[in-house]
Length: 112
Image 1 (spheres, rainbow, N blue to C red):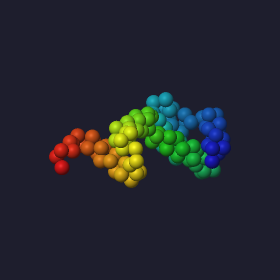
Image 2: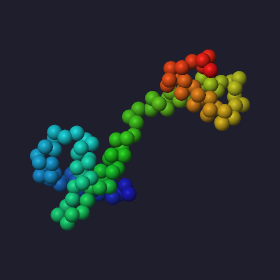
Image 3: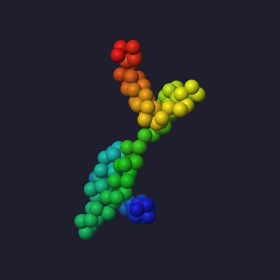
Image 4: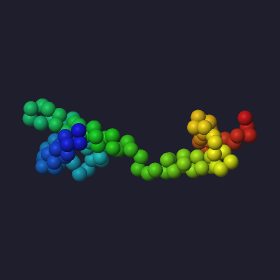
């Protein structure tokens, strides 16, 4: 699959897309460009850049930082310390979910 995407990337670099985008290729944002590439058809009517566009659009959905993961590990370190080292994974997972949910809704545990 990666080889196919690399091949399409080499082809798209030498393809004149200005006609397809009405010479406005520099004015459109990345998502609209990729949507246009997804729909682009060659002279035979084949969507030659479909896989490349799908791959790039999936890449847009990836988080650009690992702050969320860092926050979860911080919560894990807060919940599981030396005194609670024997806690099993199910209880630990539940406590992390409760902690994150309480933080999300800015709720204190004493209200329950």
